[in-house]
Image (cartoon, rainbow over all chains, first blue to last red; front, side, top):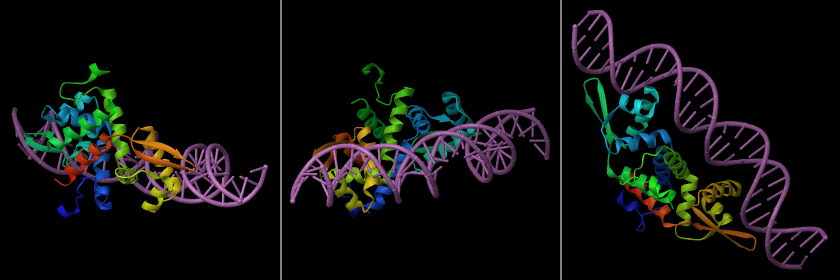
Length: 104
Length: 104
DNA sequence: TGAATATATGAATATCTGTTCATTTATTAA
DNA sequence: TTAATAAATGAACAGATATTCATATATTCA
């Protein structure tokens, strides 16, 4: 796997680029982005997030599944609740990079 | 504009997050991503890109418009040809960050 | 000017995606 | 076990989006 990476880190390998597009797709939805930002400084339950964003529990749950599948969040069960957190620091950094571009 | 940025740079301001989602949406398509990677180390014409990716000129042109509108590429006319380059280093960095996440 | 080439654009379409509603699964506490 | 609460899931629908085809615009050169 390591030998596929180009020296300049912008490897044009087509399969990786498909995966990369899939990753960015996850960041390309405001609901998911808002969830990630919320989780960037707090561990929250599904209900917490839904109330905070004033959206349906089902919507949040569906989107958390997407985030989970892409390893962007981690879950921990505590009784009836599931507590979510960001998975790693890449997430924050990707968001910061995007923010930098937008704010010129 | 500057006062909207949070100290930790993951500002939860909802309007900015919509813009941010729009930006990531642009990265979330493999064709656009492949174009950006191609342009990361060369200035290329529309035809160059279309041939390199083995896709229709029209497809590339449509996607270049999206990249232009989001200030991710710059254009220069030379005779009948339009030569495209990446607009700034943020683009490369965003791609690198995503790559880092994928490659764990 | 007219032909040839490069790029851009508009309409149409097929596919994808986010949300909602209804329901199910899982856990706790009575 | 049963009722109550939290979260996940599936189907359906509406809206968004990438590609294609056909055409228009722009530039060069004869």
